[in-house]
Length: 285
Image 1 (cartoon, rainbow, N blue to C red):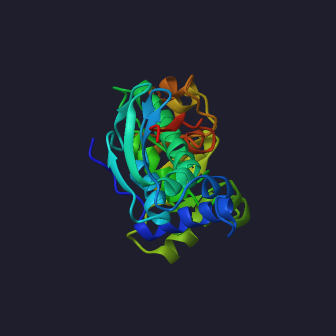
Image 2 (tube, one colour; image 1 turned 30 degrees about the horizontal axis):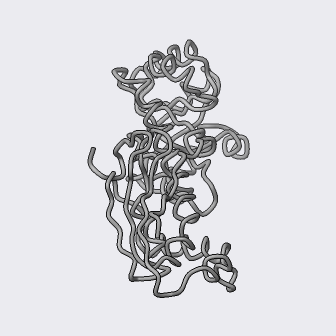
């Protein structure tokens, strides 16, 4: 797969600096600094303790060079590639203090992002051949959205909107506050311009005609069964892009995809994915 573009270096550095500040609190690594001199050097491998899809390896390795520019690293398994159990993902070498001090921050980020990528890969495989696409949601960890959405792309999924700023999505509370779907769409269209698509969330079939007539380009079908989704897709008849969302699980995603929807959004990709078990193995000094 083509490697997706990740967060900018400045954003990576801000995240890693914050993570290191949590660990070091201005006092340093009491254990490592007491055991090793600044001149001591070592080599270590970042390894997968279980099989999975890798995401965030270069970002995670950067913590070592932030601690000491003398650290060198070599990536052995790239983002978007699968690692077997026991496989070496990367090799790092340099000042022992930097390797040991940065270990947990590196593994936390790599394990978290690789867990999301692995979960996404597995769900994408479940709907192969249906024509539907898997995307994420805004149900992300505060401060980590760009990283988690990057991990979804490494797993073969796509991204829904990144935030409230980059797409229009009229949800149930917007409709309730505006008074109707027609009123909500009309006021949005009057203010966002013709280049912006409008998505409207519906949870009942009798809302679909109003959404289409109002000019919605995307209709989100919320918390519907596969049978209800199939009926909704038939009612829409290609007049708008269809998105299924709400309560989709690996056990139900195939049936959801076979309903004929274009897109399936799953918050669980980012809010419930288990971290991939990764570790750092130091060579004996």
